[in-house]
Image 1 (tube, rainbow, N blue to C red):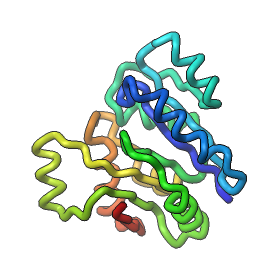
Image 2 (spheres, rainbow, N blue to C red; image 1 turned 120 degrees about the vertical axis):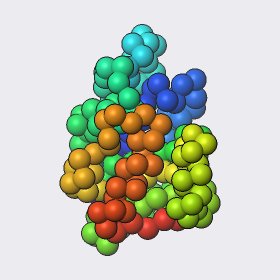
Image 3 (spheres, rainbow, N blue to C red; image 1 turned 180 degrees about the horizontal axis):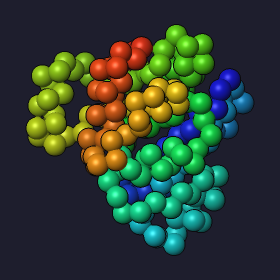
Image 4 (tube, rainbow, N blue to C red; image 1 turned 180 degrees about the vertical axis):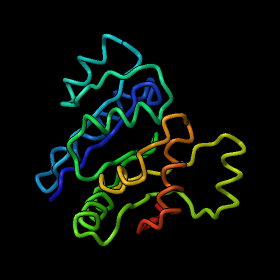
Length: 179
């Protein structure tokens, strides 16, 4: 099984960060998954060091830049062949993650998206116009992430939706699963 880096951002997680880290504990205890958690921090909150060490997460200090740049910095400090960007407020189903990592390891998929609803391009455009970030969890191979240049460092809330759209535009093999 390949190593998967779960990438979190302290600023965008906000007060829910302790719950998000605690929710990852059952996944991290599974012997069939090799996971690491990387936490990007530009808040300089002294409590984060203790929180990260308590959850066995690697804390990466970033500058106060947009989310895309912070995630790129976190990826640069990660070791996984697969990169997981969990949606805010969503649990990661174990079965979905195991299948996504197997697909990426076997090169049958380049990325797997776990979404809350089927949405066409018109719905996605409407979400962007209303500044709503879709609740999508993305698992992508590191090779494809690097091939398309990672997240756009100038984007903040749209960094991950933009990454998914660029993967589609580059014809990466993506499967979308509705939960």
